[in-house]
Length: 354
Image (cartoon, rainbow, N blue to C red; front, side, top):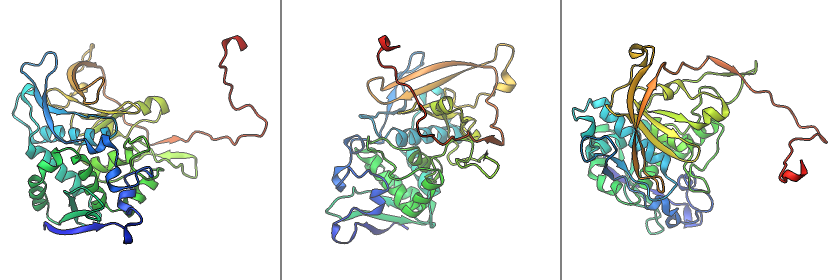
């Protein structure tokens, strides 16, 4: 374990390798030409405060200089907070700290669950024309991997660290497995869009080791009866998700995302990901605590992106019931073939023309 190796570029260097193309859009034409929003992003947690906190701040803030990698850093931040919940941290809620060891443990867990052939490939040096790809260290033992990640933690905390971690995930899970995962979800590569935004496939690869970005409760393809059958979301890190897409599409998110193992949710607002978690790191028990007025509890939300961030907000919640599970199936919406000559839609731009 920890042996060296390389993930090379294509012969002659005329084409960028498949693993690189699985990440970046065609507008990225060189190893060094990745978007600035990604090359600047570090995995460095900082102390942040919020109104009502009893101390000067808690060490959970993950700043995001530019829009782009929010899905990946939200998954990592959520995973770290879930690790605090899992380990039963004894620190008071207002003294919580995400340490280097917690970060290393979460990065290790993400890589370990992404294995396609039993091997993790850890990338700690940026891809460039000079090294013809990336240098990797290979691991088949989880303890050895944790040691390797811990030794390289300073690299991941430096600008560009998030890119090295994404490369590690991709070469570990393999391009073939990623392509299969994405196609099963009805998506397509690459996992970063032309606007430098990460797709739900990349977020899923972080959360559960599969690049299947279908976060909904149902299969995307209907069966012979016209029904979408309910899917089970692999628990992964035990982190949940709440999304504006559910409101817009009326398709519920997977049960395990709405009601996760730990009280941590990635918040998807349409074009940005933030993180929400229980202030006391304990799952609210709405059913048992509810009275006529409902159960009350506090959540914290982190947004590390300007101009609205960096900001840690405290939300006081009153809930009367827990979200119900999705039904076992749903009737797929009927699709009608367009007819030549029919009016599909009307655009009324000028009020005077009404």
